Length: 311
Ligand code: NAD
Ligand code: UDP
Image 1 (cartoon, rainbow, N blue to C red):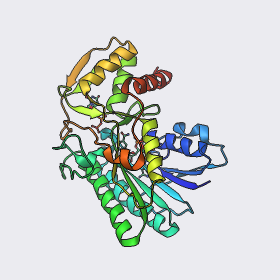
Image 2 (cartoon, protein in one colour):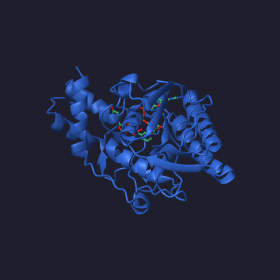
Image 3 (cartoon, protein in one colour):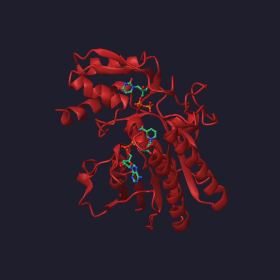
Image 4 (tube, rainbow, N blue to C red):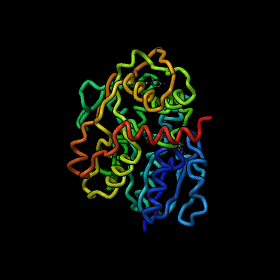
């Protein structure tokens, strides 16, 4: 049994991770400020004697005796991370410093939930970890992209300078049950619009691509990374190489829900990446990991969840 701290544990991914690590027989300490996360996501875990929930903002230091730290605290959808961009940078940068300081003090291994956004609007396709990215440092996505890039820098520097045991994963677009229906991400938007028979909002012409990973595949990759050999620190891409245009995604959701929604086009937000697809050779080699859930299968499970919450 390990004592595991999960920051952002009440969010979409964090709540699934709390559940998985508890089921595997660990003690879980879930820390969250409930900015985008919700007690509803973890309410079924409250009462489990091996689960603790702490309302805390990672911008402030936190101390606890733990063996592992998963650092997930950070709003992940553009509307939420752009709501207070200064706070987003603080969360990524100061949150990383505080969790690295804690890991150093208690000799824990700390894993950073980084992102494919470190590649920005990529000029290399698909994206290997060796690609340095094409990120606008002063645009509307910069608070998130550059905050996450700086967190990676801090992780590497604490590792080199202070011998902190670190792991960095770069997560590509992930979807599944417990996504916040109001957070504006494309999968949740389309499913909610389909279930309400409202117009699908495609930004731009819908030719931009994303690679969508089901949450269970991510959790598998994330926990394998945490348990991997101490010398393998990443960064490593964790994503599904299946690449789809946003238009293709819309068509799939319409078919799978049987919706009568129509498609409308809205302006493409600034700096919206044109294409994105992970090169997962490194994860295959070092973690013996690859995603298993195809898009249609994952969408069906996600639609099933949204049917229970969309009235
Ligand atoms: P989410 O918004 O559902 O979860 C983030 C959680 O962090 C929420 O519970 C939120 O309340 C909490 N939080 C935010 N700021 C905080 C702060 N200052 N102190 C404490 N808690 C704070 O998003 P998610 O999709 O579950 O993402 C989790 C992590 O994975 C994030 O770090 C995100 O950047 C990363 N990630 C997600 C994706 C994706 O597609 N979902 C892709 C790449 C990276
Ligand atoms: N998008 C869209 N309609 C929506 C929400 C998003 O066309 O209602 C587009 C968005 O412009 C982007 C893609 O879908 O090109 C993925 O958006 P999301 O916010 O889910 O993730 P990110 O852009 O951070 O990868």
